[in-house]
Length: 337
Image (tube, rainbow, N blue to C red; front, side, top):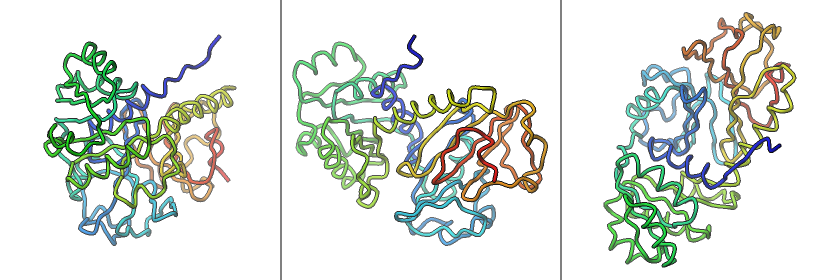
């Protein structure tokens, strides 16, 4: 009679593996079974779109993407076309994987593929992550402090180099070639250790640094340069939230397919399927009265990606991605005034 089973450690490892496969993004979420991606990136002073209004982006970049949300300090915006992007903004963009990569190349934030990965911490997340990555041909080093655990990891992960030692020891990290790694993932059981190791890796210029924290109240982590932070609690919470809301609207209304919380939980992106005879089908968006601080991020229709304008419509069986801040959506009807 169990309706849902959640393995937070495995789901967290899966999230990290997706980020490693696309290291240009600080965070990465998938919709429509991977047809569309949503990524977050920080705008630095040398980015060509800094100080640009969103309606001018197409003049500077040719990629087909949409800016769905912007975090500026502690504020979050669902931007309109006249919104101006500033230095240090964290923008969330959506598009296909290839278009996101093109956007990042054109704006100078693209990072080369990760080949060498160092994992600090051989607990369940470290084991699951090493298992997921070992089949991809990457070179993986896993550092674990517990001797018996090291033997177990070495037996079960034949393609992974298992190192016995303290992953917070700078000398050990240097001996194991930290500076030659493309990515470092800090997964010890202590948040403070993960933060310290990650800051050290950042200071050494490691291309991609991923930090696991259990308490996601560290609002200063972005300010000190740690852009990719994962929390098993939030990963599991997103899955449970999606399941509960799907149960709530299972009486024949629009179904929730995917739900992701972003920008420290302040923004939600929800993927719905448009039901038959919904009442708002085939009506241009310009004639629909949508709630403020809400954006229709994307429509997927028969495999085609549509970034809707005022003349576009929703049709039955469309997948619709809605991005909103400060609001809970349980049904597609909830987007209307």
